[in-house]
Length: 65
Image (tube, rainbow, N blue to C red; front, side, top):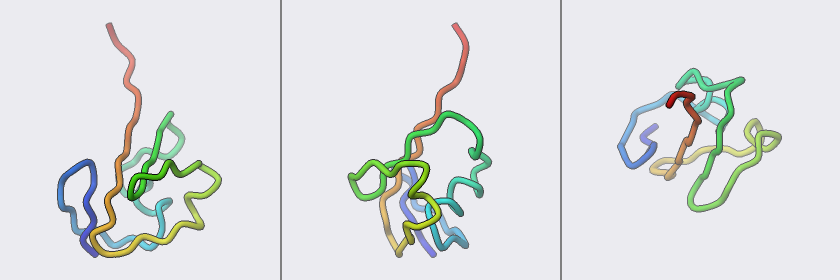
């Protein structure tokens, strides 16, 4: 299904927010997820179903200086 991830259209085989996080290899990392303008807590990821053209922002933190 086509989703909008961080402003870019992506074709993903995903059913939930958790599937999207796993697809990008971000599980286990500090991450903020926003779906259609709403912050989604980590506990909600497996329960929130994605739908075509859903806008998802994945914000992860990178160390460095």
